[in-house]
Image 1 (tube, rainbow, N blue to C red):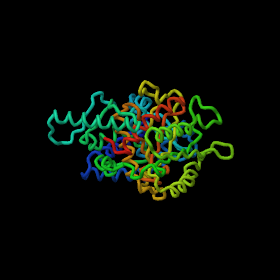
Image 2: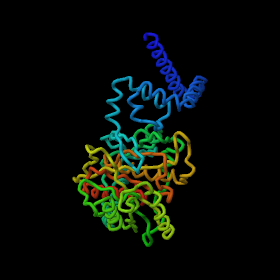
Image 3: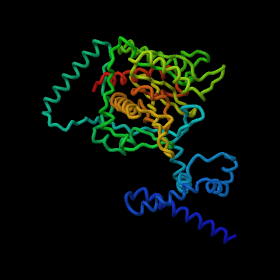
Image 4: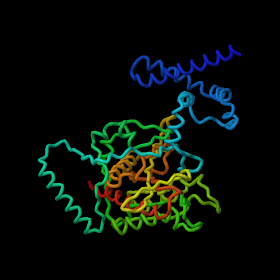
Length: 422
């Protein structure tokens, strides 16, 4: 028995040693040691199949019994990292505090961090790098503010008040700061500084090039049956569709955009909720609309999220309880297999640019209104226009009032970006 115990302990320490080489290899890029760690990683990865199953059944028989014959979804190195991390008692506590499960589409869940980046209570001015005379700068800003206020009053648009943070390009140029402050990267995908480049993304012109004589914005709902705590069964005006009605009304009546709201149902088939083909059916219906109206530049798929029942995504804006929102991007990229060619999206960078510009305006005018932008591996119909958005507004635990209140700041920041306002 002692001999078996020693053998098991030795095996565990060998695994921990290999894992240490693996971690050090990631941290010492460009060194020969890194290449050795890479080789170890490949060996581990190639041995992933039966070895992982056998380890799981041997060391965690309860887990193996629960899982049955289903394939484990994580790679062997991820399995090792998690097991090693769980040696430390603090890990389970942090994990419970930081993650929860939420749903974006049928048969697919995502692990998402509840807390966004901490909001700096002190306003940070964006510096252009040029030398300004302070009095001249103040005078210029006052004049610009007066002109903007006059324009807002003339067209009936709300005037924005900076209550939050304006981030500097120096801050945003730091890839780690940008990624960790404004994004959540799902374990199924990954992103590098080549794509997540603040200077390039913020330099993209997201202004509309068409006037409102023709449709400019299309709003639809892949999941039209998503409701709230006080939704009335069978009444779509009390679901996400009704929230879309209100967003359409604001964009049209307050900001003067020409908006089409598609209220068709793609997730309720033969009297049953069925989201297995919702995105496919939505694309089949939306494509002809875009072909009929090539003037449409912005396509918004408006959702509500799914969270644990004890989670309430709400903040206060203008004295009203307001559901928090989240911008969601599909990267058409699998961390395990690379680019997903059959879900090709030529507009991934444009989609990211629009989401990031909106997110930063939300941080500037409505701190606490948005959660971090979620990045996942698939496409989610974001390939139909460069200015495509998937927005998760609130969740099933919000009220219809909180959801509608959220459409007011959302419409404001959309207008800011689509008009090119600073």
